[in-house]
Length: 133
Ligand code: THU
Image (cartoon, rainbow, N blue to C red; front, side, top):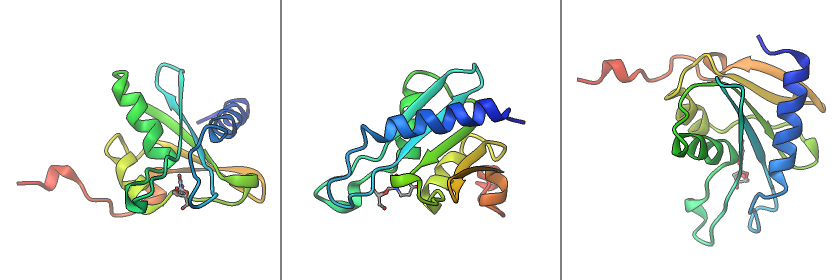
């Protein structure tokens, strides 16, 4: 369970990370702040490309940065879009995050207020790698 101070900190860090998003095509900058089990926070922003389909969302960019530094256990992720608009992670990011656990808490803004839901709730009936042959 995240404290309200922790939630506020994550949202603030995600909003800060949004400043470095590269979103010239959509003009929709997004920031994400991933809380590691160590208590550290790793941030990311969306990075778009002239070949649109190559663009990466803020959530995945934060996870990729965390994995690159050897961190694979996450407690939570906050995501903040432009002007604190309501935003919910896309399906690809839900799946990408699920690789690291369905208990990750996902903090998003609803009417400007942080809402926290477990990834398990955002991705019901998730594909389970255990079922691979
Ligand atoms: N985007 C994110 O980075 N995270 C989300 O949760 C939703 C969408 C990005 C993808 C694209 O660069 C831009 O926002 C518009 O869809």
